[in-house]
Length: 374
Image (cartoon, rainbow, N blue to C red; front, top):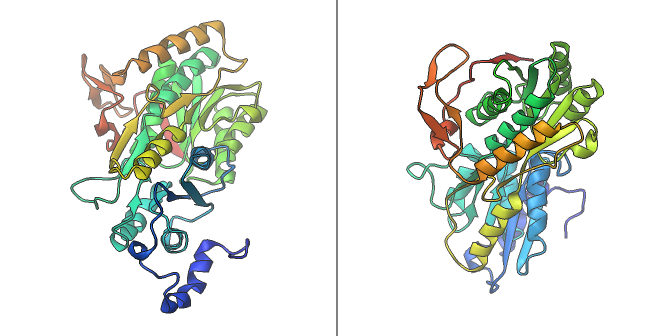
């Protein structure tokens, strides 16, 4: 057993000599197989209790720990660098993992793809929309949820709560999935009042507390009285906004405990649904899907309970809209709609439902969003 202060990346280095004696380097195919059992690895770029992205995944992994036949191994605070390759390799060689979830966006290329080639008998599934059947290995895959629908619902309650008609968004990087959330937040608010605008500030990093606090304060200074975000750990944004008197909408996991009076609702991942599905396939010896998607109706996404700051009108519209979304085929991006540079995104009568995969590779900000970097 390794010392608790030694990471599995360090342990892998020190175990290299063991391979010469047929220990750590033993090919997985030669290890004794256990019927109806599996070891599954989870890797997080930050701490498991960050009130955000990593916590949402860790909560999903925790559910698997109660499944008969499943052993869960985890490592947190693993950078998006060669370090994650070492972690994946150690989970496979030292723990016998046959399914690995490298959860962070930057783990995919080149890191996870390199491990897929090195360990063709091991399955890897990445959180995001990056897997392409025409380019990537068959033992790789991706899973994701239509959480922009949750940000749209955040926008609905924000639209009822705002007094200044200005809402704010703290974002990490301007990649399509983040931009889709920004757009959905504003469009939800504009379903209440078309005159509402949104200011988004990009910090440039998934986790950078100082810039997140600065961005939140800047948004409040500019008049935004409802704030949400897309960063790994929303804790700083939520607490800073609430301390300035602004309402907040959460993301990734519930942050209601951090600002009970100012927390309106939040778009949360429900990864337990996804991980349970993969684990059941694995235990049954069935092929794992390479491309997995789902939304609120599928239990991949959920909403935080409405807080005390939500008005009766806000609650009514929120619940009615949620019911419509759960029917399937709901479109947030629909015409007539232009981006914030005047280019037509959707003509009148054109709509992109939540399942429109093209939105995952198309980056734009809708009219009414002003963006800047911190």
